[in-house]
Amino acid sequence: MVQFDVTVAGELNLDLILYGLPDELEPEKELLASDLALTLGSSSAIFAHNLAVIGNQVGFISRIGVDPLGKIALERLASGGVDVSRVRSVAGAAKTGLTVIVTGTGSRRILTYPGAMFEMGYDDLDLDYLQSGKHFHLSSFYLHRALRPRIPELYEQMKRAGLGTSLDTNDDPDDRWEGLDDVLPLVDVLFVNEREAVKIAREDSLEAAVEKLAGRVKTVAVKLGAKGARLRHGREEWTHPGYSVKAVDPVGAGDSFDAGFLDRYVRGADMQACLAGGNLAGAFSTTRPGGTEAFRERSKWQEFLRQHGNEAAA
Image 1: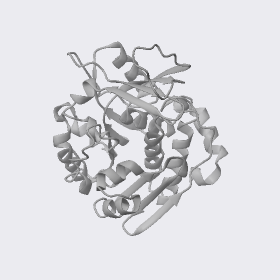
Image 2: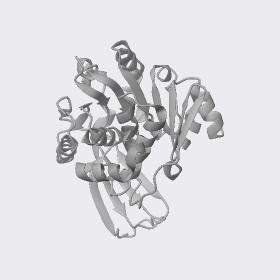
Image 3: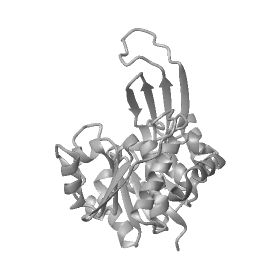
Image 4: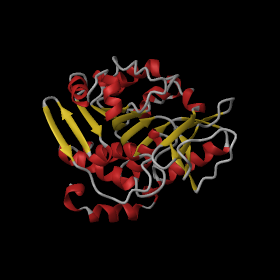
């Protein structure tokens, strides 16, 4: 029985974002930030939260520590309408993860304590629960250290149960970009940015990377930031220029794109509409600090939808 539009297995933590710091951080010197935000973090949780706010039934599986950060993260995710009944709080040395994002005048630094996300393994997953969705999504492939050896098996289970599948690899902190060969043939939609596409394909240009990845994955969606996005399905290709907004913070924009795209995709929309939905959600995300703050008020999302007319609502 289908219970969810999308089910997610992924990481759950908070983001601590510090604004207004210099690009060069001098050691042994106290540097003063101009502002901060403590928000729901991690690619999987940002994706799930925003997908639920947009109007989907979302089921989420994760592993967190028994600590205040885990409690806050769980409450934030649930407040967006995500079902968190399968999130496990596990006592032990590993605490709930935390990412500190230091933003300067023209760059940002991302510092992550992985914590419990490194420990979530295959045995933490309720496969019947995950299979009760129409579509399965996983983010942060390289952060799932315990689960990663069995991720191909997980995708096989989802495909066997008739679910659509998607994957957002996100960055590889070790810069090796290995382990995807057995997974990509089981992925219906691969979400990457330009850097990730080039790294995964081991090519020097985006064009060559998209060409290679399109031979391994049914659909490749490439997020291009302010330039919008492009999508390749077999020999066909679509582009969308994106939306112009007064951006405050790019954190989580890519995960929000995934949410907006899959909101359309699971309903059978055409590819151009999926791209428009992805770009709309990504743009909206940037209007507030952090990856989920813009989506915490559903009325603001509905207002943003109305402002951008029929293309986004299609």
